[in-house]
Every structure is written in C-alpha cells, then in structure tokens.
Image (tube, rainbow, N blue to C red; front, side):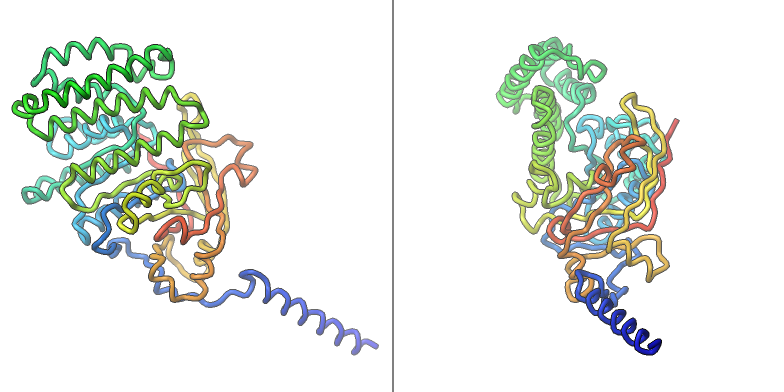
Length: 417
C-alpha cells in the first residue's frame, strides 16, 4: 500500500512539473549573458540615428544621473555626439551651456538654473564640470553643448530674450519687458487667466516683429543669437499656453512642446547625434499613458532615426519630493524577468541592445512579452509605495524601447546644499 501511494505521489509530482513547463515563461531557457553589455563605454548606435533618448525610471537616484553622463560620454566617443539635452528649462540650461564654454561661476550654481530641484545634485555638477573640461581642449567646432527641452519656466527665457533685444532692438526690448512683467517663476502658478491669455497674444506679436527685423538683429547679435532669443520668446508663449490647459491635457501638451524643441535642435544643430534625457515615460517610443509621449512624437517624425533606451531597477532608493519641495528617501522593490538576469551574473547593471538580443530565444521571449517596470516621477507618499500600481507600469519592452539599462539596485542622488 505504501509503495502504491509513493507511485501515485510521484506521478502527481511529474504531472505538476509538466503542467508548469507549459506555463508562460515558467520553463526558463538559458540566456547568452555575453549579449548583456556591462561596459557602457562600448555603447554605440547605428549611423542613421539622429536622436538617442535615455529614460530614467526615477529622477532622484544617483545611478540614473551618473548613467546619463556615461551614455553621453560613450556617444561622444563612438558616434560623435556633441549635444546633451535634458528634461529641463530651455532658458535655464543655456546658463549651463555658457558655463561649459568658460563662463564664470560654478557647476553647483548652474545646475540650479535647470529648473528642477531634482537636478540640484553633485552628479549633475560633475557632468557639467566634465563637459567644461572637455571643451577646454576640444577642436574648433567639436565642442559640447548643454541644452534643455522643457517649457515650464519664465525667468531665464526672458533673460536670454532681452539680453539679445537690449543689444539689437532696444525699443522692442522695452516694449515686451513691460508686456511680460507679470510672468515670473515665483508667481507662475498664481498668474491669472487674463494675464496668461494676453501674454500669449503678446508673445505671438513679438515673434512676428522679430521675424520682421531679423536681418537687423542678426547684423548685431549674429544668427545664433537671434535664433536662441526667438526660441526663448517661443518658450514664453508655450508655457503660458501650457498653464492655460486643463489638467487632463497638460502632460499631452507638454510632451508635444518638448518634441518640438528637439526638432528645433535638429534644425539648428551641427548635424551630430542629439542625446536627450528624461523620464522613461517621456522617452519611450510607445506611450504607456493616454496621451502621445515625446518619444512617440519623435518616433513618428524621424522613424528609425530615433533610438530609445529605457532603465529599470529591482530595488530603488530615491529622493522623493513632496508638495513643499522637501525630500525624503523612499524605497520600493519590483521583480521582473529583466532583473531576473542578475541571478546569473555578478554585475550591478547591464545594457541590452534589443537588436543584438533578437537571436537569443529566452531574451526574445522576455522582450516581446509584458514586463512590469518601475516608474517613479518626482515623488510618492508612504502609503502609495505599499501598492505596486502606484510605482510600476507594464510595457512590452521591444515596443517601447530599442534597448534597456537594468540595475540590481539604485540609490539616492547626492543633493547639494
């Protein structure tokens, strides 16, 4: 009787094993770990690529901020990229660009001008200091640039605009200094609807007047001076338009304007590969939200000439910002088949180019299936981190990105005083 029971148990165990083997992903195939690059300096993209986007699953982490520097350095070396564009204020980032070209000040000061406290970190200061050092020895025309593609500030855009108009069109400058007087960063969220509507009308009129006097302004300030001043005026218009939008339309309109900024840099750049950096939700080629993302706009506009890289981590410790602007450290965990690969490797992160992974049966299955990845923006509350849907999103990796950098663990960025 005992032998019979053991036989039945053995058959039952075998049946369960066979059934488990038929499940989606339960029977895992071996992965060719050589496909998972662990040296970011070897990262390269094909010659047709015009824009490389690097996303980050959370803004307030050290490793993601360091990785944007490492990926950019690799693209500078391997693809001749010379333009770094961040999800930061257009006008404010121009101060960082001036700094890396020798302007007075410190890296710690200029990163504060990018427009968001999440960039007020030692990691960002280290990046702009490296770019400044690089430019000191760069051949003519091979210097690096630091730009911003966001449109959510006024002050530095006004400063850039009027620095050119003061020089080349003083009457025009005085007229619009008065018109834009109430548009300030400090009061930006309290500006009345009437003032915002009037500022849009004024900005459009200014753009027309600048176009009329373009030759005169260019004769004094140069073509580049005119172009950046005009785009600063366009940013003022765009932000007023954004502030007038409904909550449901805000993100859609913002990503549309950011995509237009990237297109502007493509037209006014030196022809080298543009590197753009922002949240995964902006960079992805297929939006996981109900609106068209920046990356989706770019993918529609330039097709395969846009190359998108996402990021994720199994364990995330990050600076979470509350409504008062203060930070606290939060921690969340998320396991998926992408970070399962760390069970077979000693490295703390890897980069996977999806094209190179296409011949590996196991990786191909992972990339074409649904994966739940971390998605943290600026902040999360203590109770929200209890429920995964507050800090994760589900994607099909191959539909969303062309490659991913996956970390075992990421830690909080180093905030500057």
